[in-house]
Amino acid sequence: MKNTRALPSVDLLLSSEPAQVLRTQIGRKLLLQAIREVLDDIRNDEIAGTPDIAEILNLTSERIQSWLDQSLVPVINATGVIIHTNLGRSPLSTETVQAMSAVSCNFNTLEFDLSKGVRGSRYVHALDIIKRVTGAESALVVNNNAGAVLLILSAVASRKKAAISRSQLVEIGGGFRVPDVMRQSGVKLIEVGTTNRTRLSDFQDALDDGVRVIVRAHPSNYKIIGFTEEPDYTELVKLAHRYEAIVIDDLGSGCLLDTSAYGLTHEPTIQESLSAGSDIVCFSGDKLIGGPQAGIILGSEAILKVIRKHPLARAVRADKTCLAGIQSTLTHYLKDEVERKVPIWKMISMSTDIINQRAITWQSELKVGEVKDGLSTIGGGSLPGETLPTRLWVIPVKSPQAFLARLRKLATPIIARVEKDEVVFDPRTIFPEQDELFMGLIRQVLNQGDQR
Image (cartoon, rainbow, N blue to C red; front, side):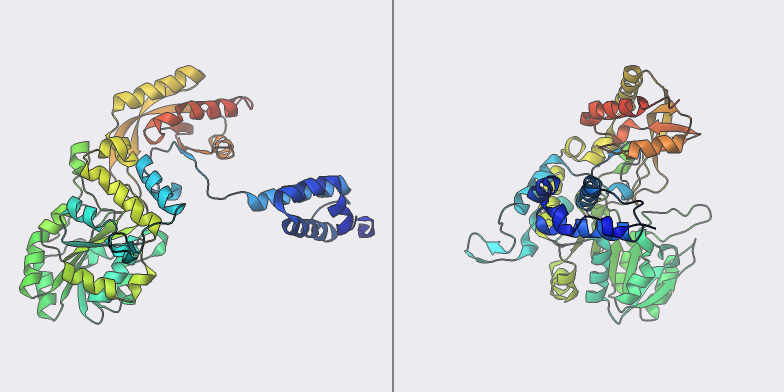
């Protein structure tokens, strides 16, 4: 039976020299809490034996470190998934990071009018550049696109009949479902058509039955193929407007560039939706736009005025860093420098020759594995099923999952994937400036023992 009476007192532990060093680093309060927890665990047999003072303080130091360790840390994305939802979606441009940092560590003009010296509105920030880039009459930035959809429907469609194709009653990340969001906003959901085929006449029947809101939820994270039909969107908008109904277009990931120019399926753009006559368009700021997490709402000033005044607008409003980040990211579009500045578009537009050369360099430097053809994916609920040709550095190892686990334990974790029992690394999603760090970390893991 453990003799807990032999344990040193809290006061004795606190007065020891190692504890004094810890105290100068983290303060008395946290140190005292950790010591008491370690002693309790010893008494409850959660820690074996009866450690001496040195051992107890070592356990205390480890416990404090575990409390202070950050769970949200940078990683190297070697998966080839460009917009990786689990890895933070779109990384930001240097300029965007600088803009967000500047307003974070300084007082700023979030709600202050410099020209008049009086209180201003946060809604003006990023407004002008959004209008210039998209051609919209007015805009509003909120915290994410799910919040944007909920706010829009609550403000302009509550207690009204809103029609949506059954093929678009989708579930997005985290189990959130479009029909649930629509019902939460107070609209009366009217489903039209079938899972695979919806016609213009289906919407006309709904409009004849009193529907005054049409919703399109773009399938940005799934694809229906085969025996399918969807009405032409421009014709749907014209039909809705004949009934004086409004059309809300939820573009999901959103896109400002022609994706077909990069060998991908054409993604409906924000500009195309506006040109088709959509009354309201909304989309994410952190997927194909390549900025921080945000939801961006476009439409006429008359409609945006109603949305801004809704009580829910405050609950989902964007903060100073988001507004600064969106403004900076869209500046790249305005200056036609997206492929040079926005990380996801640098990755999408990266040539196979450059990717191949980097993979060959890794293989020749570390003298292991081989370079093979492969595919990168867009990911992040964007362009479902779309891939880009790439070149992969492939390493055969005894236990691929054990090797991946070692990579995840590095000071800068590396996230890779397994194909055909081999570990593969895709240069497309590793920043070129990370190459030296990446090779050094891989060398470190290989030197831990014979992994092959």
